[in-house]
Image 1 (tube, rainbow, N blue to C red):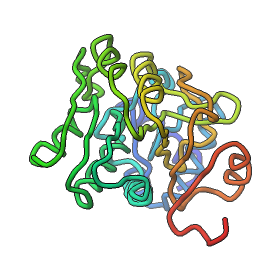
Image 2 (tube, rainbow, N blue to C red):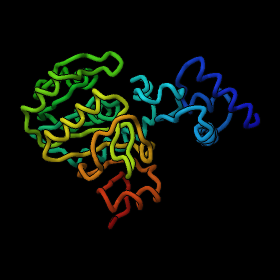
Image 3 (cartoon, rainbow, N blue to C red):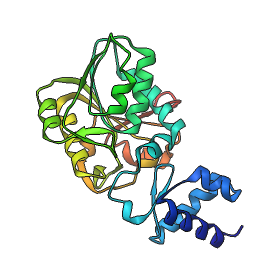
Length: 259
């Protein structure tokens, strides 16, 4: 199948479904996922779509989060990779914030396997469910206005609660990250709460899969300098590491010694 035929198939699929996954497109078209990624890059440059994590979305969806199940499935291996790397920043008995992101949900599952005594603060119903059968954990679920699309609570009640807490470490994720625009999120309520999470914690760690670098979404949350460490996956490009490391510590699984 020639490139123009693939482009038409991708755009037709987007009109029907609003979001598409690279792996499914590759299977349907009988090509590699790398070919699909190049196709999506081309179509994005042509202002035909917006690339998201693991696939693409219609342009009019750029300012909102992709459906949660889609995000949870996208870049699944990379998220497990970085979640396991981030475990080194946790010790028994500490207090941590986990935001509403799918990446933090993956991290929560890894925490449950390795620790028996933690205080968890979260606004995510999905993360609350992960720890619902762990009586040795102290769970603080932030109330507020429940967003069914995000599967989490937002608004004034959530913000007022987090302001009363002093937390050891905040683990947060963002819709995108760039040197010029900093850390960004796709919707205002999420950005506001992420800012509160960062302010409430002594240590701020961003869990960012490699696809989010050089990507800017609607609302600025903070500057890169406000983050202590970025934990990412081993697919991160050397050029990105060289560009960002003068401004923030970045770690990933399998990193060569001495870096």
